Length: 567
Ligand code: GLC
Image 1: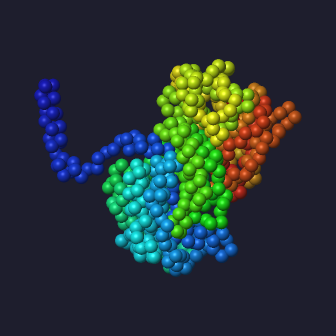
Image 2: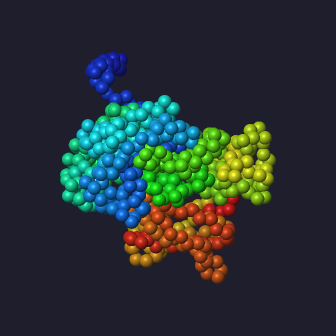
Image 3: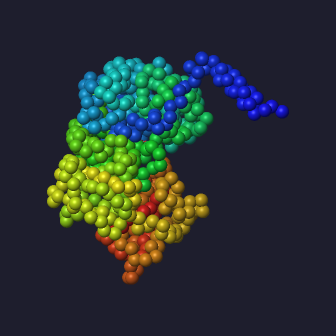
């Protein structure tokens, strides 16, 4: 029987033999394993990026026939045959394109990374691709790579660079996916064909081209139509050449980041997530759409997203000549001006402890809580629903001038100067004495029931703190409701709800009612478009509330529902 020393010596020999078994070539070939946190660090610090939707669809600029409401989906929505659509490329000649100027607008806006469409669903590549002539070099009078110069300028200015790539949908290469069509089908004989053929001969080679020809930091896939886990594998393998690269969750399998589109999840998201949003109603350039969000609204969106721990990817659709629309430039300048003063309260921050504040939102960085006040209290008293202790409070713009603080049940009251330093959002820095604990939500731990529920999607899923699981009614007949029983009279003044993050988007009518001694009283009703809702109403004391939900197609569903008490 071997003694312990002999056993120990023996195992050491075995280990050394294994260690020596990997040849130096194997070690060299093996991709360095980069810790996820290390890889995501710059992205989590950055918080704010520029999305650019650009391509030949900028030529029609939203118009086809009488309809002027198109964007980058014009070919699909207007069912334009491939041959006709390709003619737009002969007019795509962005002679005013100045990548350094684009990068400078982004940098001055306080953005830390850029993601541009290298190929959108129309299959047109803004870079020279060896596997097609449907690209900027072969199909346009411009004839040169549009992306290489932008990548260079971005990195020169210290910004990270990503490419959006439509791996599945491609409406011009035969076999490319077309959403809302059966596999292999389409609206033009010219683009019908075998999807796996398309993936093998167009999408995968192009993914490899952009990954090896450009020092990318992000790869932003989109709409995994007809994709399945097996079809994603070669794309995942192709990423090996860029071990640091960050990808999203739209390849057909999960990636590093979740991508809520055009909305801010009321409860945020677990892990890394990024809300992408348009400045008007279109991603691609639309010359007829001047429904621009205001600079104030965009700054508030940035704050709201960061207060829930997300990143903000804000979109610009340049013209066919290669310019950013002036309204975009003005809004980005305003955001940059605000961030020059308040950037500390955004960059590198994490989610604050509050799901809802009627006067603003809060971001956090370690023991500092940044209170972003968008509604300056008339009485100069800011009510912070924090049950934990704080050391001091001061205006970010007046460091060292401490503000008077007092406490009241489950709240810290901060005395503010009569005028807000910034009309859009003024930041107060609250130094924490301990881990921040928010005052409980009015609905926290309260009994929830539903008038109807699918056993797989019970009412309890609407209050589990994440939008991941959802409540769904048993069937699609008419209206269903969720009900909170508070058990005692409770003062409330707002609700927040997430809808299932699914496609096609839920279109629902929601109505909130509160129990009073004279029966149920309607507090508000609204239409949704799958982006959830946050609604404030006059404070009311009640023992229970009902959320009625009616959906246009299919059983109503709610991902998360919260009721808030006044601060
Ligand atoms: C939507 C649009 C698509 C756009 C994407 C960006 O899916 O349909 O065109 O590229 O959003 O997130």
